[in-house]
Structure formats: C-alpha cells, structure tokens
Image (cartoon, rainbow, N blue to C red; front, side):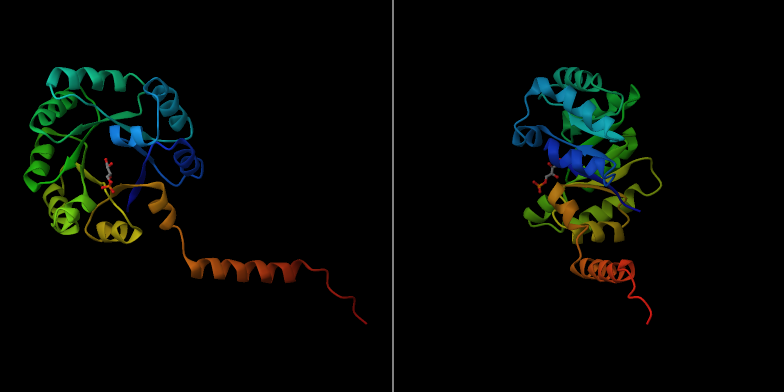
Length: 222
Ligand code: E4P
C-alpha cells in the first residue's frame, strides 16, 4: 500500500489532483512556495482551499536557525487549520523542536533526513513521519533506494513512517513500495506519469470503438 502526496504549491496542479481524489494531501517547503510565486499572506487561504478539496494533511515547513523562532513559526502555521502538519528540517536544532512539538501533540514530519541514525532518533522521539530524499541521496553519489530501504527496516513496528521525498519517477515509487515504504510525495508531473500507459490507452480506444458499434442502430431485418 502506498499513500501518495503531491509535492507542490502550484494551486492549479494541486487542486486538480485533489479534485480527482488522486492524492491524500500536499507537501510543501519554502523552496516550493517560492517556486509557485506564492505571497505569504495568501498561504492560509490557499491551504484551506486544498483542505476543502479533500487534503487530509497539508505539510507546511517551519523555518529559522534558532529554536524559539522555529517554534513560533510552527505555531503560526498550525493556526491555519487542524489538518496542517509541521515539517521540521532534520538539523540538531530541528530535532529538539520536533521533540517539543510531538510533546504538544502535533503531527510532525522531519524532513531532509539523510542518515539512518537520524531515522532511529526520529522514531525514539515519536515523530509521525520522516522524509528521506531519495533522488538527492543518489545525487550525492549514494544509493537512495538502498538507504531508504534500510531506514524502512529500522522503523518497522515503530509509530514513525517514511514519507519518501525527492521521488523523481513512477519507477522509484514502485521500487520504494517494494522496499516497504508506504507513503511518498512527488511533483504533479511524476504523479501524472504514474497514471500513464500507452497500452491502457489503446485498450480504452478499443472499448470505445466496440461501444460505438453496439450503440449504432441495427440495420432492419429483410
Ligand atoms: C521535499 O521536501 C523536497 O522539496 C523535494 O522532494 C525535493 O525534490 P528534488 O530533489 O527532486 O528537487
């Protein structure tokens, strides 16, 4: 079982996937918000719109190099809606912030997780999700799928789930599922590509042609 999230703040693309019930929710980070050209003041309205369209969770990332700032920003983000979950970068400061948010009962995702020991500590402090970056691990010359598989094994039976990020192709989605990963986030184009099959399209055309024949008025008997 794989739950898919869309990793984007492109309102049109995200809205379409939510309307079609193709994703469970939305993941963002400051880079994604900036790429979408979002005005900060518009964020609450846009996030609430995604929730109205059925997003069960919307992940917004706190920021700041110091603990107090990160906690303050997390609070502001949480105030947007109950469905907002807080992403925290997996830095040393971020781990402490995540632990505090967990204690307060928040749903927390530790993001940019690159190391297996980080996965262990994340589970120990009780965060709900970690997001290892599969593609970026590969970019760094490491084996992203293997490293995420190791984390999945370590987390088995814990309350912490991998929500894999930097997933750049449908084939990686499948490979992650084969390795026990149960949630991933990907750009809209990757999710759309996961739906595509030339053979399925050809089969559908065949069904349409057959149906056209069935619906054509029969020639009268002579
Ligand atoms: C998630 O938070 C990241 O924005 C994203 O998954 C990175 O993907 P990329 O490495 O393909 O840019």
